[in-house]
Amino acid sequence: MYTGRLIFSQVMDFLPKHAFDTCVQRYHGNYRVRHLTCWDQYLCMAFAQLTYRESLRDIEACLRALGPKLYHAGLRGSVSKSTLAEANENRDYRIYADLAGVLIVHARALYKKEDFGLSLDHTVYAFDSTTIDLCLSLFPWAQFRKRKGAIKLHTLMDLRGSLPCFISITVGKTNDKLALDDLPLEPGAFYIMDRGYIDFARLYVITKRAAFFVIRSKNNLHYARGAYRHVDKDTGLRSDQTIRLQGLKSAKRYPAPVRRITFFDEQTRTRFVFLTNNFILPALTIAKLYKCRWQVELFFKWIKQHLRIKTFYGTSQNAVKTQIWIAISVYVLVSIIKKRLGLELSLHEILQILSITLFEKVPMAQVVTKSYDKNLEINASNQLKLFDF
Image (cartoon, rainbow, N blue to C red):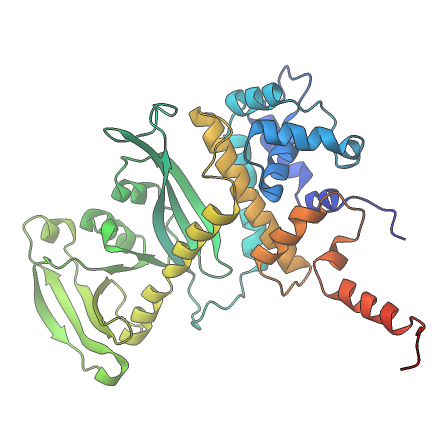
């Protein structure tokens, strides 16, 4: 019989504790803290994410019911609703934002050879945002519309492994284009975006940084065709052109030539027009790159369904950002566990298993793999038969 550590402790072993302590010291997170340290706060919030708790009272009731198991899980401070609420309210959310950044670096190193559907040597990113609705009376700082509050999650996702590598949290009324100013640009990388990010001055910055963009064009674009390349229309391609912008403002903001590719999707009966500053890759590859952008949409759908970011435990801006960054760190942590243990299960399946086994003393590798089922089959085959027929 296994008498070792709790699964929750085994999960937290994959989190670099030294890096966490560095983040805490950077922002003086434990300054004059007596009861609930930043590590205790993180464990409580990670527990809430992994077990789908809905409120601070829910977290408090469940943790107190575990009794002495809390000590073996690594929790040293007393857990109460008021103490946890105060910690989320006052401790700098950047502690957990920096921790998520450290985990993302580790995860990207593990997934750097992952296949995302196209064999390219370049790094490919998808950039998009999602809106999380809030009650304006409870979150007055999150202005969106006259009677509605919201925040936006601007996310840059590395398509190898579907990992978020840059996230910016803003109020709902922030224009998506402004998020391009903070985008970390990597020479030689591709940035795939929807047409809501069309801003030719900012797109020209990407070109000057020796990076590439693929973006869907708007219908009212004014341009002059300079060159034309033949395409195979059986593949869905309709045109491959080199153009120059002719709009009064757009021509000044983007003085270089642009490649314009038209593609018709037979399944959805939709015509797509793409703009890119890459003139080397085949036109069909550019169209397929844009199709990969939907991975960031799937990421948004996944975290809204499986992580606690639609119901918040606090109403201040710091509390909301703390919860979001801890949710993202849990997502990345589970991705790291999946890769290091070589698991074939999806992240959803792993989270479902962890949610009901966190405080059992079983080897985690046995729980999240099929080895447990195999042991059951072996034991069943050795069972003596009661009847001969």
